[in-house]
Image (cartoon, rainbow over all chains, first blue to last red; front, side, top):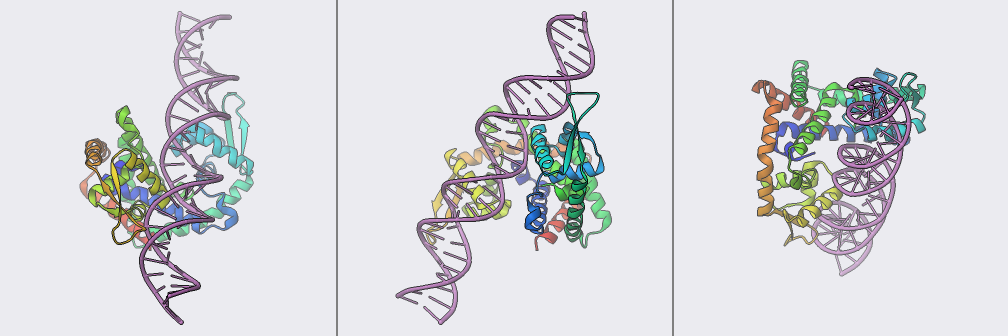
Length: 145
Length: 145
DNA sequence: GTGTTTCCGTTGCGTCTGCAACTATACTGA
DNA sequence: TCAGTATAGTTGCAGACGCAACGGAAACAC
């Protein structure tokens, strides 16, 4: 992080907003669930939308290194939230499936997330939110070519 | 990071955009300067705008822990980019000043940053960029109360 | 077939990070 | 004045991360 985000106010905001949201989320979780929060939950959320993907897919969608994904999946597998199954046609790859316990945890996190989001977006017009999202997406695409 | 950013597309974008920009920045730096990039440069950028602040101030402005700032300032001091001087009226605090070498490094990073920013913002109307920034700021304020 | 290249996942290593505990100093109120 | 509290910075510790190197498996060349 940093250098460039310290130059440009818009990008600085993106970083700060992300940090702030994460902190809020963590505060409002019960002690027994805090160890589940954090970077691993992004994978759970991903899997709830598309199950049975490869670790490499999770890496690209989250913009993290595949090594990091390996370790996250290790953790989630130990916690019983996901399952690793070998791909029948390609012995290199492993397909990741979410378990029912994994879905439960996700359902538990969702309302918390929605509350924080509602607070963040209050008193902002829907149209302006849409523009904001479109601009960020465009910037991302511009850099990602 | 994550949980919530995986739920909300706008917040997911903020995280991804920040990561992408950092990666780009790092790619375009010469080998001998890459070790200067990274989280420490945010402090340099901060100091170029307001010199002689406390470490705690740097922590709050960057939303990082004061322990992290301590270690960053250690690094920057070793590299000769900043100076720690005791506060004359409060023996607990130390004032951080940027050195001329620090300013030089910052001036070196600036054009690189502007290039990447120009690429990111190309073909986006100024007005929409302004709206985007305003929305993010508002969301930040909403959460930060 | 064999050799080369490419891809998936794992592991080792170093860096960045926050939290908690600590020291030293400043402040506050009886 | 003195006890209690708050604050600035440091350090130990553990978690998360990326990069580089590796092994196994596929794909492609010839």
